[in-house]
View 1 (cartoon, rainbow, N blue to C red):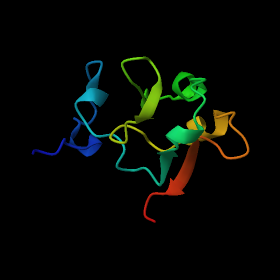
View 2 (view 1 turned 90 degrees about the vertical axis):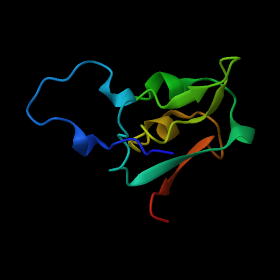
View 3 (view 1 turned 180 degrees about the horizontal axis):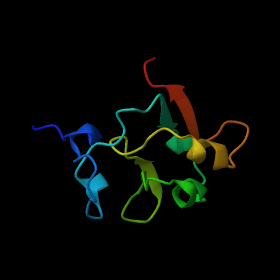
Amino acid sequence: MTAKPGWKQLKEGDILEAGTSQKFTTADWRSERPIFHKERCIDCKLCWVYCPDSSILLDENKKVCGIDLEHCKGCGICSFECPVKPEKAITMQNEHK
């Protein structure tokens, strides 16, 4: 299995074509990792709406099923917007824990 190249392999000072994030791993600078708790999820899709990296994964029934960790930068918006209480369906954890 060949690993995807990281964002540091992108050309410098050049205009890039659209969709390059699909070709490269863009999460290698992440300091916090989202953890999806399927048993708590109410499938409101607020995490999917607010994710700036389109890293919230949906299954064939359009239900939230996980997080694309190759592209998630760990901003935490998904966890912040999750309305589930008292314990959120997405929590953040230190990447190097």
